[in-house]
Image (tube, helix red, strand yellow):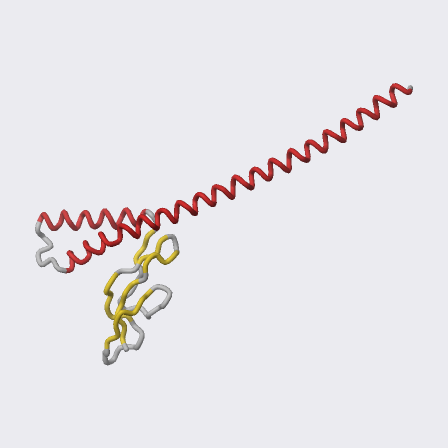
Length: 154
């Protein structure tokens, strides 16, 4: 009988130890899963910043395409159409990376998205309304990448 009591005691001890180990393992697993999730979010955020840096470096090229298009007189020439197609491909690539243009002309000035580079006296127009875009502004993944440079009504 003494032996049975001792075996029961050892069994209870083993059972208690098993529960402690299981609880510890479950906590460690939950901690690991949380760590993994946080790391994936951090990596995704780093990739977003990397994309933003690349897009910022490409924007001057897009600006040059915009400027060249404004100064073209004959947009029906095959060479010019090819050039404009390259511009369109570049815009599509940047859009696929989460970039979008900031609306300007006709919109009310918003210091969060626009930068005033000039004011124009214009009769009959509401003050603070954008009348000309000097340089396009862009948003990427909901964040300001570059403000639009604009002229507004005084």
